Image (cartoon, rainbow, N blue to C red; front, side, top):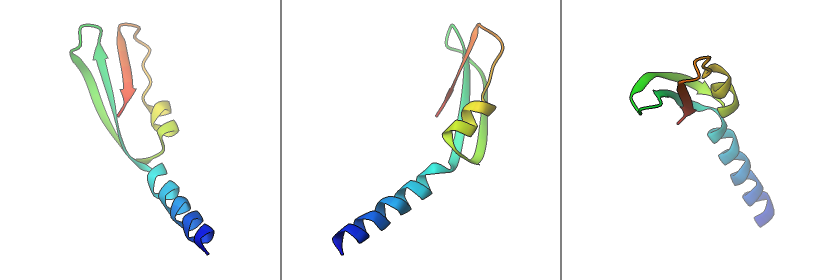
Length: 63
């Protein structure tokens, strides 16, 4: 009984935490903000795909 309750809790936690609103922040090397974008109801992997940059002087990260 305890195992099934624990399994249900973990499953629910995983399913609710997978898809979220995520923010892509891109900054220049000096630390100033180049851009910020919000992606709604996406996984971290999807957000990384959307948050791409071709300029080597700008770095982007998912928050």
